[in-house]
Image (cartoon, rainbow, N blue to C red; front, side, top):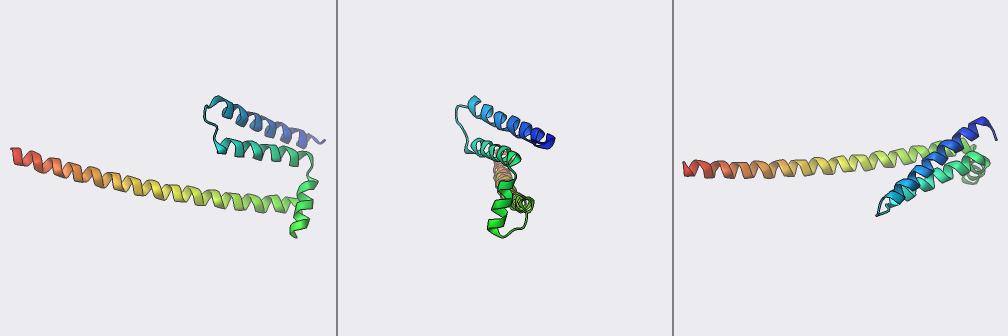
Amino acid sequence: MTTFQIVLVSVFGALFFASLVGSARRLRVSKERYGWSILWGIGMILAVKPDITTDAANVLGIGRGADLVFYCGIVVMLVGFLMVYARMRRLRRDVTLLVRHIAVLEAELGTQNKERA
């Protein structure tokens, strides 16, 4: 095992352990924590046996395993950006509806106060 592999396995192992500890501390275990644990576990396996990515790349018609990992990373990032964008749009819509509701309530209260005076 090379020094880089040892460092990489150590980092992935610490992240894997942190994900599991985070899951154990909560009463309700989220799917997201399991997903991260699986990702870190796969990272450890691929750090120890990098030929797996080369074999998978060859099956898919990609020349190198590093290219396959790179392409998968790009796809995951694009999906993540799309999810963040969709959430931001929902939040903007919710804030707009909330501000409209508050404005209507304040307008109604303002007219009621003027009628009493």
